[in-house]
Image 1 (spheres, rainbow, N blue to C red):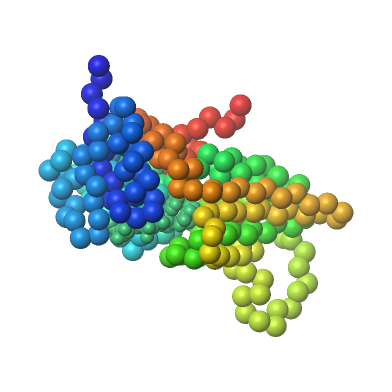
Image 2 (cartoon, rainbow, N blue to C red):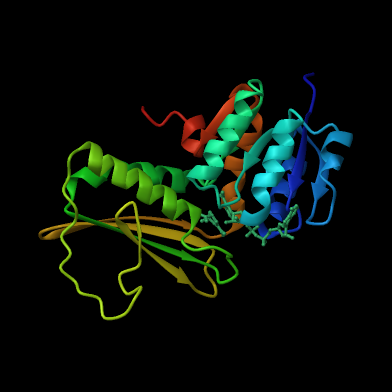
Length: 252
Ligand SMILES: NC(=O)C1=CN([C@@H]2O[C@H](COP(=O)(O)OP(=O)(O)OC[C@H]3O[C@@H](n4cnc5c(N)ncnc54)[C@H](O)[C@@H]3O)[C@@H](O)[C@H]2O)C=CC1
Ligand SMILES: O=C(O)C1=N[C@H](C(=O)O)C[C@H](O)C1
C-alpha cells in the first residue's frame, strides 16, 4: 500500500478550514497531521512532517504562511484571497530557489466556478458589454471576491487578445461606486447578503440579447473535491500554479 499523504490545514477553525479538515480526515489516502488556528506556531508543520499545507486563512496571513511552507520544502494549496500581482511575483522568486516545491493558488475550488470562468473567457469576445456581479455572505472579509478579480482579468485578456473595443457606456455617475469597481476595465459589483454562500454572475450583452453565466456554491462542501484534487496534485506540479484549471483538462 502506498504511504498516506501527510496534510496540514491552516485556518482549521474557519468556515473553509472546518470543511477541509473533515474532507482530509475522510480521504483514504491522506493523514491530517495538523489543524492550526491563528495562534498556533507554524513550526508545528515541520514537527509533524507535513508534506502539503492547505491555507484557508485571511488575506493578511496567507503570504507569510505560504512563504514559511516553501522555505521548509512543504507544498502549499492556497484558497485564501489577497494574492495580487506583487505577492505572486515575490512568491515566484522564492520558488525559483526551491524548484521541487509546488504551490497552487486557487481563487475558487468549486469545479462549476472554474468552468463558469472558462465559459466567460470563451464568450467574452462575442459581446459588446461584460459586467460581473459577485454575491456572498456578509461575513466575507474582502471585496471584490478573488474569483471575481480573476474572472475579470481573464475576460479582459480574452477581449484584448481578440481586439474587442471597450464596452459602450455613456453613463455619468452622480454617486461614486454606482457603476461598481473596474477590474482590468470590467465593472465588478459586490453584493453581501445574509443567507448567501458564494455566487457569481457574468453578464454578457449585445444588441437584442444577453447571456448570463451563473455559478452558485450553496455550501462549503462544494469546494472540497477541488481542495482534495489540489492536495493530491501539487507535489507533481513544481513552481506556481494560479487557478485550479491548471490542474484540470478543460480543452476536451
Ligand atoms: N478558494 C476557494 O474556493 C475559497 C476561498 N475562500 C477564501 O478562504 C479564506 C477563508 O475563508 P473562510 O473560511 O470563509 O474565513 P473564516 O474567517 O471563516 O476563517 C479564517 C480562519 O483563519 C484563521 N486564521 C487567521 N490567521 C491565521 C493564521 N495566521 N494561521 C492560522 N489560522 C489563521 C482565523 O482565525 C479563522 O478561523 C478567505 O480568503 C476566503 O475568501 C473561501 C471559500 C472558498
Ligand atoms: O469568502 C468566501 O466565501 C469565498 N471566497 C473566495 C473568493 O473570494 O472568490 C471563493 C468563493 O467565492 C467563496
